[in-house]
Image (tube, rainbow, N blue to C red):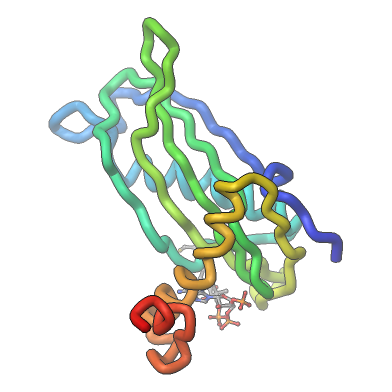
Length: 169
Ligand SMILES: CC(C)(COP(=O)(O)OP(=O)(O)OC[C@H]1O[C@@H](n2cnc3c(N)ncnc32)[C@H](O)[C@@H]1OP(=O)(O)O)[C@@H](O)C(=O)NCCC(=O)NCCS
């Protein structure tokens, strides 16, 4: 299987925040943003693997800025690392100032997908070769995040989490 670069999976979704999608403070409802992030990230994972992909876990989400009603929101998703059958995707969320057009980072998230065959069984995916400094940084830390996610899901024993243990040594 031929290795791929992160830019081959880049997926950008731009949409507005409408009244039915907000909380009582008139900001974008968190669950709606998670769904938009999941949609963009699953397309990125699909572009990388060219397979059916399912969301296995949401490893991290930071809602650092509220997104007001009427905002133009851009969700950018890109594969940050591929393992045997699983794919980690980084999602950056930007809001755009109406007058200047300047983009500000509002939120980010990291999701894990698993490529599966028609019967739902995990199937191998191509390797990822990071190119930019940021892509290399995200790639390097992905194994640690995978081990943490597996540990929290009860799918890995603490003494097997070598990357996590190394953090404390
Ligand atoms: C995701 C799913 C396919 C994993 O099945 P599984 O029996 O755990 O499969 P495996 O143990 O063989 O793991 C497959 C891969 O997923 C990874 N994985 C499984 N659970 C994970 C978790 N919580 N966090 C990170 N990675 C995980 C494994 O590490 C493995 O990766 P690798 O092959 O790259 O090393 C299965 O749990 C599933 O179908 N879940 C439902 C998914 C779904 O419907 N999502 C939509 C939301 S409702």
